[in-house]
Amino acid sequence: MAQRTLVATDSPDVYGKYQLLERLSKGDVGEVFRAKSRGVEGFEKVLVVKRIHPHLSRNETFLGAFVEEAKVAVTLSHANVVQVFDLGLVDDTYFIAMEHVAGQDLERLQKRARLANRPLPRELAVYVASEVAKALDYAHRRRDNRFRPLGIVHGRVEASNILVSFEGEVKLGDFGTERARATLFRDGANDSEGLAHLPFSAPEQVRGGAMDARTDLYGLGVVLYGLLANRNPFLGTSREELTREILAGNAPMVHSLDGSVPEELSQIVAKAMHLDPDQRYGSASEFYEALLRFLYSSGRRVGAYELSKFMEDLDDDGDRTATLGAFAGGVEAIQHTGTHMDPTAHRKTAVEGPDQEVALLFLLAPSNRAAPESSVRSLVARFGGRVFERSHEGHRSTMLIGFGLETTDGRAVDAALRCALRVSRLPSLAADGSAVASVQLAVGLASVPIDADGMPVGENLFANLQHYFWFGGQLGRF
Image (cartoon, rainbow, N blue to C red; front, side, top):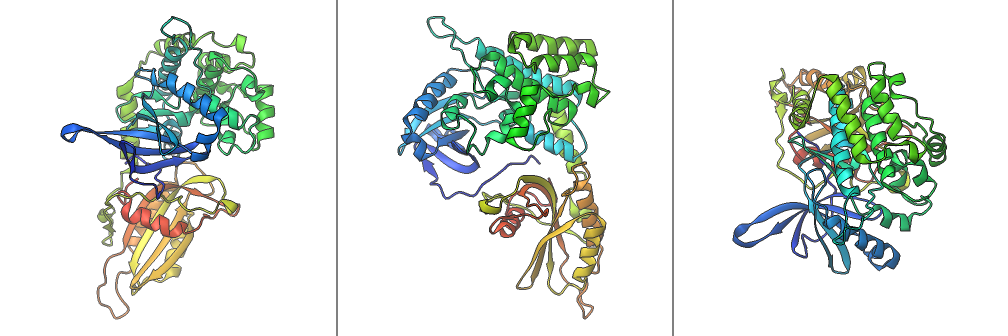
């Protein structure tokens, strides 16, 4: 099952001509919703609405830059660009409505592949980068109705802005926001999203200099580097450290990190990421041709079908033990009905740590079940898990267990499933020997804020995670 990041919201369902279905994310600039537009004769279309925060709608400098860039973004129409349909104003807040891509962003796809120990094959990584290069080439070459270059620069080419559909389409999104954002965070201060973006920023961008098409090529080079090396080219943990590394060009060659990466491909990445913009590819088209030549020389051409199959196989690999009812001991799978609750909602920002994607095991058992808690905790420790929290409610006992806190070697889900199997085999009789209801188990993935001690943080986090597992998708699947 594909993952979504859903955030609880108290926003009204109706926003202008759109019905807001769920909030997908919230950032410094605005909120992003999955929404629906309605037409005659029951016509409906699912799309995405990005709503600017109300206070920014009163910031004339920001608003001017945002509207001008959004006007340009609406004119973009390309198979590899997320289509922007509408720019409007509702209740003194500006918004843009754009295409809904059923799939995952590349950042999340990378995380899932890493957890499953199934990195994106090299040829597919090159294919993804080549598709993004086509999107950039189209945008960079756009002209107005008087044939004057529009000078479009994305400025934020990174894995989280690259969407991969279940059909294997690759689309670059979020055109038209970077220059507006720059009016708010000229030096990066107070930009909560800026640190995550910084590794994808070109040296001239870090210095606050002028950006051009070659700035976007640098960002795409960093994306491809991460896909091939399975790590970021820069390892600094603070803004200052990352800035020094980027300006020094300290990224090691990809083939020096992974000997299986051909030096030819490593050189392509290095050229895109050159410190000097004049030494990079002169255009996205040149970058695309270099990637295409490599694919031809490798003897293995791949495309949307192979990318779609990879996503399908990744889901199948995750679902290999999906039906926990097949476990011995009468494990009962709980069926989901869909939710708007997110496991990361209502966190305490004062103590919030970085989000970490972990495998979670949720247990629900009758309070009169004979298996003692010590037995469960012993099994959890054996498989490298950690009990986050437990609670008793009436005749029901619940426990939430996390795996993968110490390592991201791809075995967290396997450990959670093996632990679930062993827990399911614990005694299922009440103290008097009579039968009791079977234990119910669920395994899933979630991004959870983790503190310095490796424990989840956030107000009502445990309750929200229970709600997520109880209603949010299909338990026993991830």
